[in-house]
Image 1 (spheres, each protein chain N blue to C red):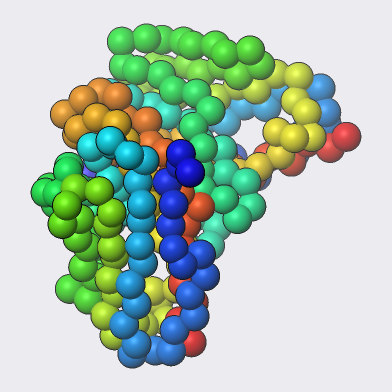
Image 2 (cartoon, each protein chain N blue to C red):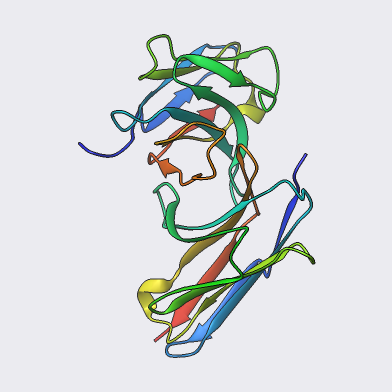
Amino acid sequence: GENVEQHPSTLSVQEGDSAVIKCTYSDSASNYFPWYKQELGKGPQLIIDIRSNVGEKKDQRIAVTLNKTAKHFSLHITETQPEDSAVYFCAAHAGKSTFGDGTTLTVKP
Amino acid sequence: GAGVSQSPRYKVAKRGQDVALRCDPISGHVSLFWYQQALGQGPEFLTYFQNEAQLDKSGLPSDRFFAERPEGSVSTLKIQRTQQEDSAVYLCASSLFGQASETGELFFGEGSRLTVL
């Protein structure tokens, strides 16, 4: 089955700095790569996604890149704000989504 | 409401008790997933329904776990003879399209936190 590894497990940045989270996957059948943000006591919420036929996608301060050959994808958050503090999960989807173990992002004001 | 609704939000059970967790997906969503999330970890797949058909139950950890979606909308996850290792947050998610679609966006509920004493 699919295996998704996510790094780092914790990330602390100053407000205004950029944050990068990286994931690798194992199943070449995966064709959809979403990123979710989870706040305390809530379910994960989709923030951005990318499909296998696209290498990069941007939505305001958030961007994702995908390298299918290397089987890795990354989340980039620019101009971080305190409200970006949360746990972020990557996932690889081949009929069902397999999640990484999450990155706890802390943005210090 | 318009989102995925789960109940109860919190459940404390004594070891050996049976529990039932309910999920009301977004109306019209074809796919429904159950995930288990242990503290500090990512959601782990349990089972998947397309309408009323349970197409994948490969993630259910033992035969004590059972899920159903009899009319293709509300789903129930049942855990029999609960054990301490069952303590986790159980997340339900729904998706508009079926499994074969590349559109895999999941809409999650807030989860049911199960604590087994």
